[in-house]
Image 1 (tube, rainbow, N blue to C red):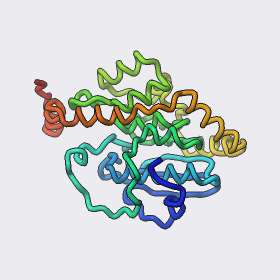
Image 2 (image 1 turned 45 degrees about the vertical axis):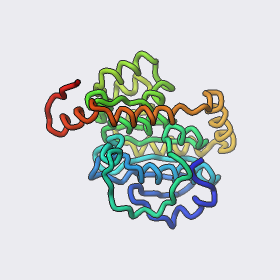
Image 3 (image 1 turned 60 degrees about the horizontal axis):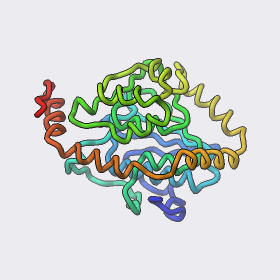
Length: 267
């Protein structure tokens, strides 16, 4: 656990730098709010996400978590500049977590149904959020891409999340070849649960359906599901592998080639 119940109780008095938090009628809505950077996951944003998800875990009044994003990209994945030492001015009042936040484990520890409403493209580590949600309502024009290998990296944690919902060979092929798929293909592969021209309408319908059922039974059911899936965390190891890849010469060349709009020269 990264935050205690006491730390999260004043969530609506906190200043979030990269998220918008709304709570109404038993639904906690978390919106990624860094559109100018394609909602890339800065460490501060990850801490804020952990804080909000821990609040949902501790607050019995929250019976559903909805994840959205501002702008035309749902999430571009990890903010690689921050991994390489780039800093931003911090205005967030969220306290520091007690340990490293691992998004894959974070979703496994919150026994509240989650819905991702995806109206913009998803890249790289953004799939860690999407794949971890129980439901994914996506607009038909949305595309999903895993381009890490083209930058000298690999989607380690995303791979683990995808393996829970897709066949292994399909997951490995996507990770190794790094291509983009459309919404229909993502639906066929099991990543998307609902394709919708009107995501708000489908969200409202699904919300009504979920909230009509026993919240206690659902929490116990989700806890049981994550328990039988195995609670031993792989994400600390996978994060170490990601850092190792980021620090490699291939990653430096791949990211530079991407910025310079040229083919990388792998060593």
